[in-house]
Amino acid sequence: MNIGLIGFGTIGRAIAQAIHAGRAGQVELGCVLVRDLNKISSMDVGLVAGRITTSADQFFAASLDVIIEAAGHAAVRQYAERTLRSGRDFLMVSVGAFVDDELLSCVKRAAAQSGRRLMIPSGALGGLDAISSAAIGALKEVTLVVRKPPVAWKGTQAEEAALRAAIEPVCFFEGTAREAAASYPQNVNVAAALSLAGVGLDQTRVRIYADPAVEHNTFELQARGDFGEIKLELKNRPYPGNPKTGHLVVMSLIKAIRRLQDSVVVGF
Image 1 (cartoon, rainbow, N blue to C red):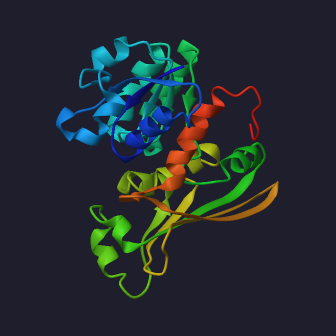
Image 2: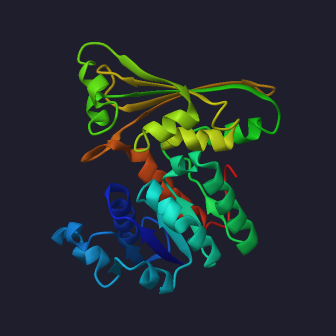
Image 3: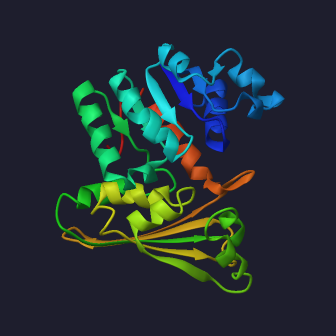
């Protein structure tokens, strides 16, 4: 199976390294699409030599079975529909792009008409399988509380609030998942994924904290419905060198690539 990769930041690089090391199964990295070749370090040249381009046309002309997005919301808007209509599955990270209902409808339509799949991994949050199962019945409440160290909010709209969190936690956002994902796309794509699995972006409630007491990116999920009740807490280690990305996000993508090859699937 040949993998196409859009983006070569923290997540893209980690996926390329996993493929190179054989940790993603029997797959090959076919082509990588980036915006700026100058950002590719000399250490990474061996991973992508002869397989990296800034041309979308060249990228889509390559022999690829699955395309992975690891480049942000703009990349989803640009390439999700094109990927599906080109006959490839689309495995994506930046789920928060789907706060745009029209975009989501277009991408779903492209998947249905092409017979290909739009795939959203569990990412930084566990329990999406249980939430999607619970949504078969009535879900009365789904709430996600996000707690991250102040440094994780550097460079976001929450940076000023994070500076006030030197001593005690600061809750700088409370609202719907749609509002959260739109305002903090680098940090709470997980809220959008949770919403798609459950009761939707406008019914899923989110609270976000800059918290000096936590060392890990922490997610507290609560849900009630006909099935009963879920309470789940995850403490995700930040990926080395990038506190905005959870280690579990990368692991989730590698697992998703492996699952595409598995003959036995647990947790389907």
